[in-house]
Image (cartoon, rainbow, N blue to C red; front, side, top):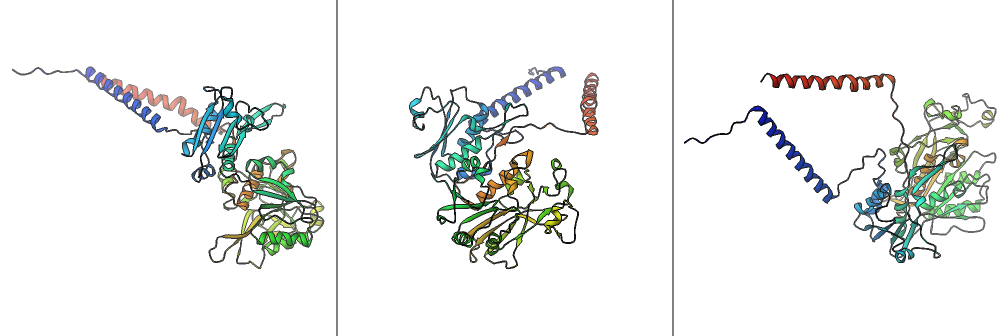
Length: 482
């Protein structure tokens, strides 16, 4: 006897296939979610990668040789998601870092180990410790805070990674490189120009030195000479020369002064850097700053591909200079010294060496002008001629010390500050000194032209609905005719 066979009409078959497909998709999604939870797979989809660690932080974590503990002081379940997303990235990227959330009210004994002068550590703080070293990061230190035009405070950036990475670098080593700023020549030290907190966050210890009275300690990581208005003595220059020969690092930022700084210029020439005394006038329109009326003395120079400037290029930062002098390598070109241009003007720029003409207010070209491009920042690093490895002195020179303090009503330029910090780190070349930029929370609106707006509107309002309607009609009539 022939077995009966089941026959399904089209609608039944279609419903069955739809049900099986739905069940399969749902099962697949459940399996993917389970695997994602077990593997802790996450993706940072924010445009500025607010919750992702930068390359300097990842490099630091890869080189850790000690256990680091991060304690976040919050009531469990009330910790800010935006903060903890960044904090937990340290645990995910290193087996040597552990992260815990602790309620300081319920665990006073644990928290008291890290308090100084028996002062309570407030809720919202983060403690980073390793061995016997620790650093407490206050809740307000995790943000960039500024005032708007109405005088109201507003959060403009997040500094979670900047603060925690700096703390890890310190507690894992216990060292803070020493920076000494030369005084006695009417300088404008970095510490007095708003850089003290940035240098402190990057794990530097700041101090001052008078070369007239004392020698440079051998353990000094960097010496700075910022905006001197009077010259060094030969004895002071000799101390700097000896320090550099012994492997020291020097950061010099100069302004054009009425008094020629002959000794300072001579010291730099001994290290293959010639100061071109004059003012750089930028002639390329798109490098000028509109807020200053396109004044050729204020412009955005081009950055070279030097390793200290790569982070700025990647972040699309543009330093600005004003009334800057120029530099070039001397004709001696000593083989053991490697010269690096850092910032340059365009080929349309000019160096005004006849200062009397500039002083008259006439910035039009004159025969004595020297044509660009012109280096407005440069560096020298001494190398071993056999191994070609860095060995010996390092010098970074900037042609506009006044720019570091800020530009008039614009105040301190963040891009300039980031450049200075990167150059300091490069000159010091110490793994305990790190500089991670804060991450801006500003959301700029999308700006599109009229034609683009019309095209997008046509696609969304007319074309896409027509395609959907046409597809539906085609499917309907094909099924009806079966």
